[in-house]
Length: 391
Image: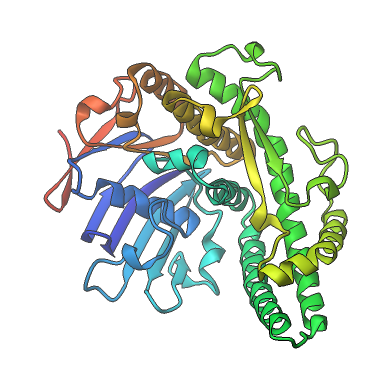
């Protein structure tokens, strides 16, 4: 899989940009603020309908413009598809495939797959659980786009249920009573969609764990056998169900996750904690309260890993994602956004060796010296609102 052509209009700092790409390594070199990251961000948006830099779409539209347009021509197994996305703040975004409109923008998911490395990724290790949940869910959607709908449905139900809990708590404090029948109905919706999302995450963590261990050993050049667990790096899913999580759902999984079994467990736990939820006005059980534990040996990476170890773990998670998606039959485009400037010389070289054989690698760098010599290929200069192929 590779992106053959990128065109953006009023996206970030670019009134217009047109970039012909090809398989292999492509390097975009430009000083900070010249817009090189904006170009690879557009490619990432075409793959995920989200940005690795901001949580909303509004900043993606150039100041003063009514909308932004991103067009990517994607080649996969000899077949080319044109994906067009129109981003309009305050209105519904629109999408087209090969010039034909689709019902929802998320219908384009799966046409382009990317794995993006960026300095912001350090938050996966050092940040709050929401960063790690986002990592899991983004990878889950990349593997199976139907989870975009499940995640959207879960978020919608969670918002409605949380509003009911707040009103029920306020009524109780005011000496009144709340209609819990409505809350029970939302419990059912939350458990149903939550079980689907939880099942997907559990299976994903089981699938990615060995890839993370192997990738960490390759990046950090460590011996996996030195850790008591048999791995230097490990990942485990921590559910808000706690001990109520059905047996057999550890890592490695003894069985494929069963949504029906998980739904029953979620319903039972929601019933048990309902008094606390009404008192506090928040939903205490569900995938939105879960976390991905990142371990080095027996210690959590957060709080114990050095700066270099944290970067090795982040790189391992992204490389593991790349290998898992490739196993699924569609090798993703690798995007390395200003990541080499953050790494020491040894990690730069090892990462370059590990990615150089990918079908397409897109690299951004402030100066040519940041790019390891292993990554030779096409080079573009990004400067003063223009992107030009270097001779």
